[in-house]
Amino acid sequence: MGLQEYFAQLSRGVDLVAECSGLSVPDLEKMGASAQDAAELLSLHTIYFGTTPYTGKQRSAVNSARSNGHTLSTLRQIESFTRRVKARLATWNLRVELCATPSEHVTAVARRRLREMRIPRKYTERVLLRQHPNGARQVLCVWGFVNLFG
Image (cartoon, rainbow, N blue to C red; front, side):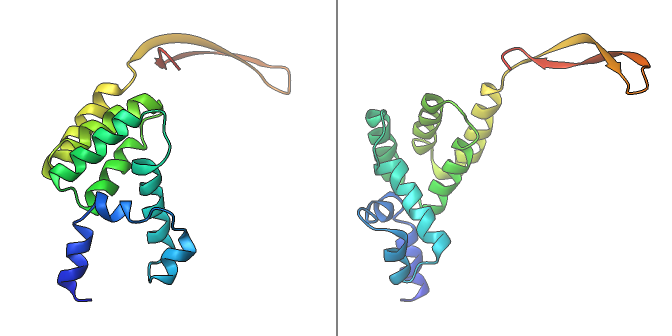
């Protein structure tokens, strides 16, 4: 396989991930993939074609990624951003939005959305009392930020 064929395969993105159905890491390694590449492909297959309670969002993400022609590297990039979100529904909402975004704008859109999702912090004053092993006590005033929801 020449470089042109290699890059053509990588540009297939979601379709390349779909071909991993029913395969395991050892199967992909036998085909010539490194252990890391095999694990990554299977991880992407689980996300985009595996079992999920959000099948409608999954279908929408796959269709959008196909129609936008997202490459394998774009799918990796999308997943690197969605990993930062803890709530499963919010993760799927972000994934659907990023799959519907043209490749060249994925980073900007993801950064903006992640910034919007950040929990606001509230400035507070607290008092901290420390008791040392020698019996001495120390009172400290602490100024800082505290998460409203954390």
